[in-house]
Amino acid sequence: MRSRAQDLSPVAIRERILDAAEACLVESGYSSRLHAVISERAGLSRPTVYKYVGDQSEIFEALFQREITRFFTRLTPVLRDSDRLDTGLADCVVFAVGYARRHVLLQKGLRDDPAVVLPWFTVLARPFVERGTDYLAPLFERLMTAEQSAAIDSRAVCEWAFRLVASLITTGGVVDTSDDAALREFVAGLLSIGVAAPVAQMA
Image (cartoon, rainbow, N blue to C red):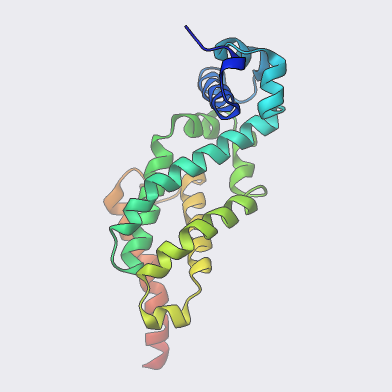
């Protein structure tokens, strides 16, 4: 038997609502009217749903924020297992693209409701880029040599990684993003261009 709203903490109520919202979106898509089906699935009143998550756009944002937090939690050990900036960056990109590829709700949105999902990777992306940069910059800094730290801004590395991952997630191309080895080779090739250009100029 489900707990009543008055028996739950505000955090637990919000999580129940977001769990219900995610399930409803997977079943019905982003374009459906959500509050009625969310309240029914969560066993909470519609006013409670509005109180804790707001309108439909705020529900999407709350789900995106929650998923970003989950993603960072899973990405952290991947970067901690790396020992160099180039391999860490490749590990980050491969992990992020694979994570997105397996994410049922994201893939459904990209396929069925791109007009709702794509802005979070483009015109609405800045807050998430900034949040990701704040979180990831120290992890990338740990992988840098003294020379790299003097020459490279770790926050720029984070933003570059986001832009690359967002492009690979949302845009088709010649790279087979379902093949981790091919994706890693692609990222390594991009990194080698940045290294090779100054060497070629010096020769």
